[in-house]
Image 1 (cartoon, rainbow, N blue to C red):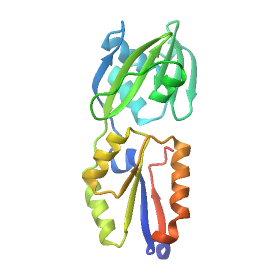
Image 2: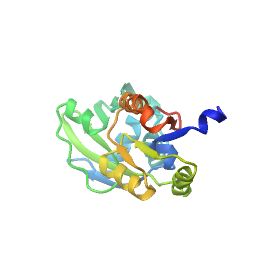
Image 3: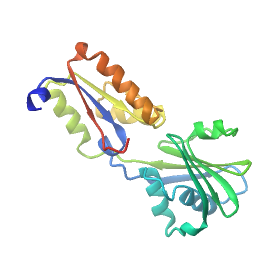
Length: 210
């Protein structure tokens, strides 16, 4: 393994929890209907009560104690979000794709960060914007890889392209592949591996969530 590592020319990073801390904080709650910010946070926290993604953890921590008995139904939509029954309402929480596939027109997100969109029954409710923080040693790690002979560094993320590009630019990453579902990250990595003779051996670095 040490000999294989010595031949690495390409490193592919998954963003969240690897180059970033993976500990999100809410920066804004954007209401598009009759619901208050407090109601939006409550619905998002309950919708994400069983999810293991860092965004879900941040929403639950911001809300507080969860009474799981209030959840009547729970369904994960792979790579897109969740659907629950809560207080006799059907709540969707997740990506723009989840909203669009359910027939809603999600608002354009304003600001940096990751957005969790919400819909309640037949109404689009808005989105909650959360921001991650780049690890203090991430730039030094990327620079150190360059010094060790790595010639290409790529970044994979499910976040919006603007978020990924901002982080990539700050760290000196060569290319960014954004708005990817978990299976699309695998496909992108396979594409990079197929081109590996051009770059040498390839290493993937992630926190294991995907």
